[in-house]
Image (tube, rainbow, N blue to C red; front, side):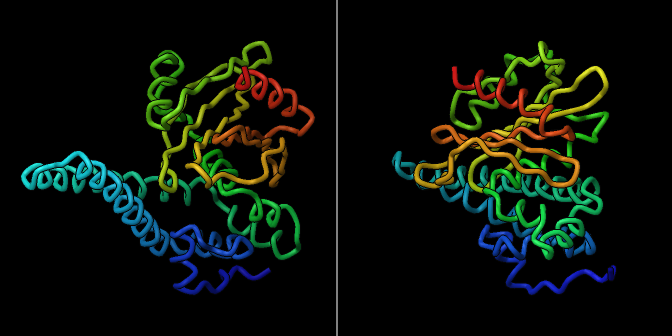
Length: 269
């Protein structure tokens, strides 16, 4: 198979940033980003700017609705600009980490999508599942900083993530099944942040629980408990009300399924 990355048009890169890319073209775009770090950094900056502008616009609208004075508005805009710079840096770091950690994932997806295999199923899965798999691939190999807040601050972690996602959250207890909580982190999303909890067993195997909260009317229409495999990774995912959950691990489906059922049961209580 040729090592030449597939041709990707500029319009497709912008569609990728806007969340409008044809799912069948996702493997090709990922392969191109993998092969062109400079291009990937440019696309990451577009995405950072888009998200920062959308968030700033919503926050300014909320402030204006509270009859902010012109002087106060100047302060608001200045604050948004400072926060936008920080968000852009965070997005660029995430994109760089994704390129380093994913390795050959883009090419792997491209090959299987062309054959209608597992890569095509991943490309056709809900957006939050694709985000979950990408975040899993990025952070599970990390040894020094796999989480942002450790399990020794579990109460603070759950409260902080719940506040940022705008809904109460739980970190399921999986010690009885051999997995202890390592901690979690806040992740960027399209308009709303995401949360990731990470667990590890005595053998060093890790699994992640990804949580996404959908805006009203924007969640997937399919809510059933489903599974998907991409290479060594198995992911079980489901939707409850306005929340999407994805449990991912490099485990056989038969081993991950009882864990997914336990997580599902605890979150439903």
